[in-house]
Amino acid sequence: MTSKIEFNCLPTAIGSMPQTDPKEACSVVAKYLPDLPAWPQLPMRSHLENMYAQFSEGFPGLAIEEDKVYVDRTADFDSQIEQLYNADSEDSTDDYGISAEYAAGLHAFLALKDRHPHMVKGQITGPITWGLCVTDREQRGILYDDLLAEALAKFLRLKAMWQEDFLSQISPHTVIFVDEPYLTSLGTAFVSVPNEQVTTLLEVVFSGIKVLKGVHCCGSTDWSLLLKSSTDILSFDTYNYADSLSCYPAEVKAFLERGGNIAWGIIPNTEEASTAESVASLYDRLGEAMAPFTREGIPFKQLVAQSILTPSCTLASMPAEAAIHTLELLAELSARMRSKHSS
Image 1 (cartoon, rainbow, N blue to C red):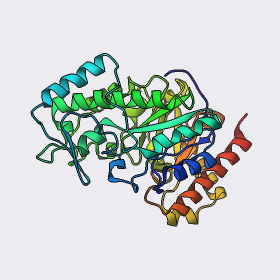
Image 2 (spheres, one colour):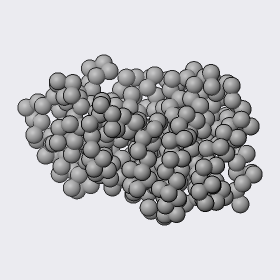
Image 3 (cartoon, helix red, strand yellow):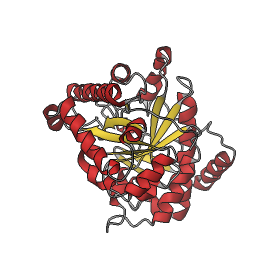
Image 4 (cartoon, rainbow, N blue to C red):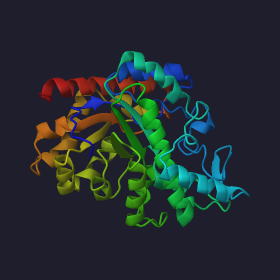
């Protein structure tokens, strides 16, 4: 934990947006999330902006064919691995940046420095999800290859370091979220990854983030693994999976006591659900999600102080107008929580 910080229900986004114009997407983010804007990932703009390809530049043997991202052990593969390990040991991010071709929204986001936001949010795909979705030639996740698993964690660590430094041009106060949707598959027949490996690989990536770091999972998982990690912020889909976190009251209490924050993904990310909700209904729903913890002795005031509000997950699958409506609900709910409960 870098230092204790209280967000008091500030709103931010998970990352992906439906727009294809990066300037337009950044304008929407700046309007509704002025205090904690998140750079927009734009998967509808290019297949290079899906969460697996977007952070792949520079990985040894990496190849992209349409929507497939895989590793091909080419003739110079060993030298590329050696280069990666050397860069990791020297904290050298020079060869592991994220170009505008792969993240147009990130580079357009620099224009926000004129708005002087207090803090900015970035995001990167986590090592478990990336390692399961990037495959070898046999379409087996590279996470199951010990050499590649270690390499990918070091690689994503450098990517996170580079991104944090890039975002510091806008504000010295940064937070980088590590997105891990595939943690929902832990313990199933489909994903055989020991908890120790999950923790080890996540901590490698976290170690490259100097300021604040968060982890996001948009489903149900073993939250104790993440609550006991070094993350500063736990982000989850509250709208659909509030009950999953309420099973860990002791771990949540300990997490908050050491200064952690919870990002409550309380705004639904489907057009139908977003249209059906109101600020009043979401206010009540958030209160219901927090209630199990107050019953376990966590003061409601502390929960509010150590909270961020977000959509439940990506907005990229929504029509642009519906995504904007979702951010409107988010901003208005945040304003209501802050006016009613922030000291």
